[in-house]
Length: 138
Image 1 (cartoon, rainbow, N blue to C red):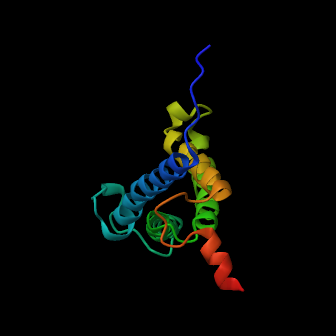
Image 2 (image 1 turned 90 degrees about the vertical axis):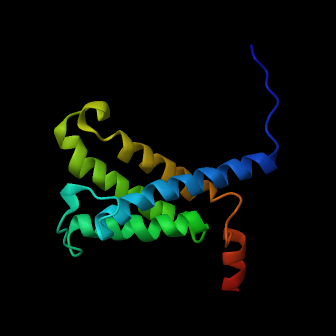
């Protein structure tokens, strides 16, 4: 059996921070496509902001920004996990059981990555860590 030494806690926190930033950037592009038309996706032409897709665009844009910055990571990730679960069950699941067939793989993956971040926090490279945020409450 392959016995690899564990990564140091510093590397774990750094890689967690990279996961948070990259995931936030990937989500951010969904929000900019819906709200600002960049990158252009034809199905989002004339999107009403006060619609379910408009709300998802707002959550994805601002949630993506907050994740990239590392601000309120646990709360934002929890909300986004819920958004992705709703997206999966409203949009993808009715098209079939298997995510590879109903094009729901990304929504499912985002859901569980955000759920993970909501539990463990944002790792390194955060503008405001959870510890600093709780210190400001007192």
